[in-house]
Amino acid sequence: MNRLIQPWLQPVLRPMRPVFAEMLVVSLFVNALALALPVFVQQVYDRVVGHSGVSTLKGLVIGMAVLLCFDFVLRQTRARIMQTVALRIDVEVGRMLYDKLVALPLRTLEVRPAAYWQQLFRDADTVRNTLSGASVLLILDLPYVLLFLAAIFAIAGPIALVFVAVFPLFLALAWRSGATLASASETERARHGNRDALLAEMIGARTTVKALALERAMRPLWEERQADAIDQSVRRGSRADGYVNLATLFTLGTNVLMTSVGALFIIDHALTMGSLVACNMLVARLLSPLNQLVGAWRGYAAFRQAMGRIGQVLGEEEQPRHSAVRLERPKGAIALDDLAFAYDSRLGPVLDGLSLVVPAGGMTAILGRNGSGKTTLLKLIQGLYRPGRGRVLLDDADIAQFGREDLAGWIGYVPQECVLFAGTIRDNIAQGMDDASDEDILRAARLAGVHQYIVDLAAGYGTEIGEAGSRLSAGQRQRIALARALIGDPPVLLLDEPSASLDRQAEEELARNLAALAADHTILVVTHSPALLAACRNAVVLDNARIAMAGPTGEVLARLQPRAHEAIPAPLLRPVPAIGKEAS
Image (cartoon, rainbow, N blue to C red):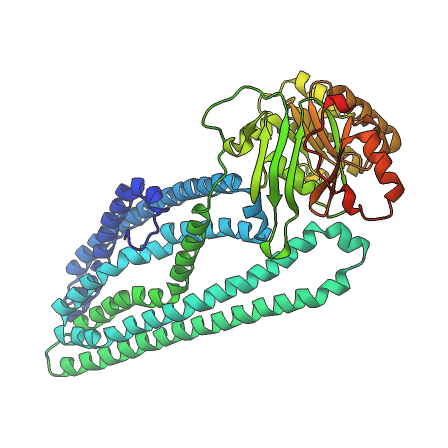
């Protein structure tokens, strides 16, 4: 069994070995009791009918009634055991997958579509259903095929020889169906994955699709992928039906053959009528798991494939959650040491050879044209991406040694696309700090400039915001996301276009709040807002994957303004290694 189960699943199943052993014992009694009905029929034909043995019939009926009640209890017990197994597998595998996904680096999550990660939990359902449903019962019942075969030999040996002759045909059919359906099922899953990935993109970009009326343009692509998925499903279903129907043909043919042979032996008085009827019932019980094996092979193939996919993800390298040693709160000095990063080596670096020192405290603007790497730089500083070369230092310590939760507590981050979660406003602000008090939440909301808006609502901080904050405006979502980043009072704050959805008044209020916060916090802000730039002490300009200029904001803007419509000239492409308070 261990050879069939992948290593990641063995620790989940190992504590359940006693449960599976119990199921094996229960299955033994269930299959043993299944012999009672054919024996009962044989006795009725041979002793009751032929000899008018009414008293014998009464005894047989009472005995069968007792056995049937016992059989019901055993089957109910086995069903309860299966429910327990399903619950344990659901809990353990679901927890393993969730813990793994949240521990994977951001780039690992980005290189595959969202539909792939969603499919993993459907794979977990496949594993659970296989190990706790009809499939595992079929495996438990298969060994008892020999029990029914032995019973047929005991009742009518010549008929048993007929079954032994046709048994290899069932095994060959089961093996062939498994090999064929495994490949067809994997292709079907890939086609459905392509369709689901497109659907996920359309739902994620529903605003754009609606605004630009892209439904007609997207329809051909959708129909093509939908048609591919349906076509592959039909092909796989057709093959599966063919094997199931062939197994049914083998079953009916076996019954005809065995009945014919039995009739000849009855004519020669070598077999009784009751024995023939009992043998037919036993053969039906014997062939049932073989027919199920042919039909259920797709499920076993899907189980192996699901185990493989989950095992591949569980084998991915994780980003540690905690540091080896719990360090004190950093002051907030940031340094870039020959930093380089590329999304794809074939496309060239997005950032290349960045060296810069940002002392603790103060607000620094990061400027540059679209695609110059501003957002990527923030993600590298936050530890969301690993640099291809070089280091990011926080208080002279390489951030690669810190865990994800440590960095999240020290470096607040507001991305360009703010994402909230269904729940209340309070829940969303407090997400960055498990033990956040009301005072912490109010302070963060005031700094983000959203407190007054919240208290004007009928439910205040208890207001439900809907899926992804759909009941709020873009500006409101942005300020709540900023409050969420501020909740733990991190010494470093990274802001990516934080005023993009704010009006002029809210923008100026945000600039004042950030300027006050910069007295004892290090703030890096990607922005082109005049209000925020005026509050920045220093500025860094990115161009052509490098630092083009760095220094006091006024000087940098003065040098950029005459050339705002031009590319940054080559003489300015000299990175300034450090910007400090004295430069202001």
